[in-house]
Image: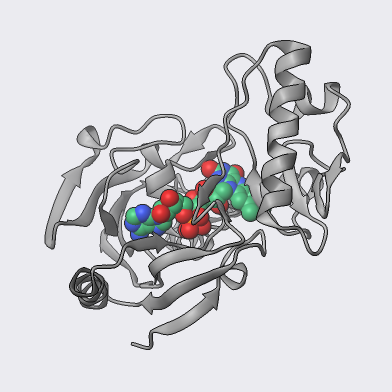
Amino acid sequence: MEIIKNELMKNHTSFKIGGPADEFCEAAKTEEIIELIDYAKKKNIPYTVIGNGSNLLVSDKGIRGLVIKIVSNSISLKKETIIKVDSGAMLSTLSMFALKNSLKGLEFASGIPGTLGGAVFMNAGAYGSEMKNVVKNVTYLENGEVKVIEKEDLEFGYRKSFFTNKDVIILSAEIELEKGNYEEIKAYMDDLRKRRTEKQPLLMPSAGSTFKRPEGFFAGKLIEDAGLKGYKVGDAAVSEKHSGFVVNLGNATAKDVRRLIEDIQKTVKEKFDVELETEVKMIGEF
Ligand SMILES: Cc1cc2nc3c(=O)[nH]c(=O)nc-3n(C[C@H](O)[C@H](O)[C@H](O)COP(=O)(O)OP(=O)(O)OC[C@H]3O[C@@H](n4cnc5c(N)ncnc54)[C@H](O)[C@@H]3O)c2cc1C
């Protein structure tokens, strides 16, 4: 494994924003993850785990200590309807694997640009389904010990799970699906891809939906009704295509995005008395 010093996190986030991590390393196997954590503990430096960086706003000052990017990506069929998958595997690859095996239930995840680990951590969801509906169990690392947790104990909620706010690393999971029809699964995936491409600014760097859906409202609609479509701070802007997305027009800084988010929150609160909570995770030295 190669530990890189001062690696720019903008190279590892879908926002294309983020200053240097003091140290950065990719881990492709469980043993490598354990080794890297040992390394950080011995050096007495903090560590941060990331997947594909598609839900992150990393500060311009970067991240102190070691960043471990999980890239383990083995996917295999354990039983007829159960897939065993490493936490660094991309959801798109996993969904294609399910399709090839005519297994249904993961179509919703095919267009989410994250890893299995990030998706389990966040309980990622779309188009009426979420990870909660497909995860059978999760293998994770806590205090140097490998543990398994079953779905009933995973405390999945809206964009949260048992793992939220815990110092643990998701290593792999078993995904339980249903036997389906290849053509039907493919048609549904194609339909969702089309809907995403039509509605979302997929060609611009972003971290997906900036805010969680407030009870009884849609964040994008509130932002648009507040007159903020296209509103900018520096190179950070409310997407013209979907007001729920903040996009990077080129050289946006984390500071720009933070200010834009705060302006949106303030305006929406004033106009509609609704508090918008960020879905995007802000990490590093703000
Ligand atoms: C264009 C676009 C569209 C999107 N659409 C959706 C959508 O429809 N639905 C949706 O829910 N999200 C969506 N997202 C957001 C994002 O893709 C998901 O939240 C995804 O699950 C994040 O996965 P990741 O691997 O990128 O995690 P990261 O962004 O790298 O990390 C997210 C969090 O998970 C933690 N984490 C990551 N891996 C691990 C691990 N192995 N162990 C422990 N903790 C870990 C990180 O520490 C961090 O706190 C979208 C993003 C973009 C850019």
